[in-house]
Length: 456
Image (cartoon, rainbow, N blue to C red; front, side, top):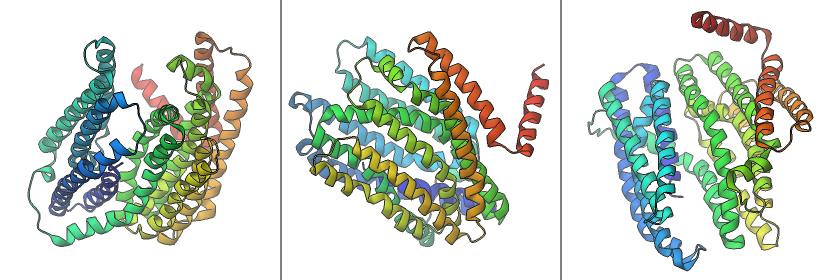
C-alpha cells in the first residue's frame, strides 16, 4: 500500500533519466541519477516510519484474519516493509538500465528471478519445521536482495552516472518532486483500486474472497508481464523521440505500441479466458467461489487498459502531466467510494470488478483527450481508426475462431493443451492478416526470412 510513493517516483525517475540520455548531456544525466537516488533514500526513511506506526496499528486492529495467525501476519508484514525499502533505493538503477535499453540484462535478471522463485516453491514443499507463510516471506525478501545486488553491480560497472555523488542542485530536486507530486493522484488511483478494494473485500466478505481476488490478480500479473516487458522497451523510445523533437516518429511508436500490446494479449489471453474454469481447477484444485468470474472481468479490463499505456507514456514524455493526473487520476479515484456504497447496500463482491472495468473504459477516453491537449500534433480520429479499429477487427476474429474450436476439445489435459496450441497459432495468423497492413506484413516476413536464412 505504501508502495504508491515508489510508483510516483519511478515514473519521474525513468522519464528524467531517459530524457537526459536522449539529449546526450552526461553531466546532467549523472546529476539526475544522484538526485533520484537521494530522493528515494529519503522517502524510504519516511515511509518506514509510517509503516512502523500507522501500518502496524492498521494491520493489527482493522484487518480480518484468524487470531492464531497474528504472529505470521506480523512477520510477513515486517519483511514486506523491508522489501519495500530495498525497492525504493533500487529504482534509479533499474530506470538507468531501461533508459539505456539494455533489455537483455533486464531479461536475464527476470529469468533469474523466476528461477529463484521456482526454487523457492520447491523449498516450501520440502519445509517441515517453519511456518510456510513466514518462510515464503523470508524467501521473497532474499530473492529481492539478490536481484538488487546484481542490478547495482551491473550499473556501477557499466554506467558512470550511477556512481555516488551528492548533488546539491535544488532546482533538479524541485523538478523531480514537482513532477512526482502530480503523479501522486495517479498512484492513489492504483492504490484505491488495488489495496483499497482489497481491504473493502476483506471487511465485507472475509479472507476467502480476498483469496479469490488475489488469484485473479496473479493471473492478470502473468499476462501483464507478457506485455510489460514490451512496454518497458517501448517507453524509452517514445521519450527519446520527443526529446529529439521527432514528433511523427513518436506518434507512430505510440500507435504501434497500442496495437501490438493488444495483439499480444489477444493471441494468448482469449483462449485462456475460454478455458478459465479448467485452468483454475487444474492449478488450485479447490477454487474459491467466484474466482472465474473475477478473472474474466479483470482480464477484459487488462485488454482495454493495455491499449492506453503508450498514450500515457506519450503524456509523460512531454513532462506536462498535471491534467493527466487531475482528470484521468480523478476518474480513477471514483471506483472506491462507489464500491463502498454498493457493498453497504448489500451488492455481491463481483460488482467491485464491474465498476473497475467501467473505469477502464472511461480512463482510456480521458487519456486520449488529455494527450491531444498536451500535444496538438496528435490526431485523435486517425489514432482511433488505426488502433481501436484494428483491435476490434482482430478481437472479433479471434473470439469467433476460438469459440468455434471450443466445442471440439473436451476439458481434459491433453485436449486442452491441443486447444491452446491450435488457438495460439490461429490467433497469431489472424493478427498477422488483420492486424497489420501490407507494409508491416512485408517487414515481418523479411525479418522471419532473414532469421530462417541465418539458422539454415
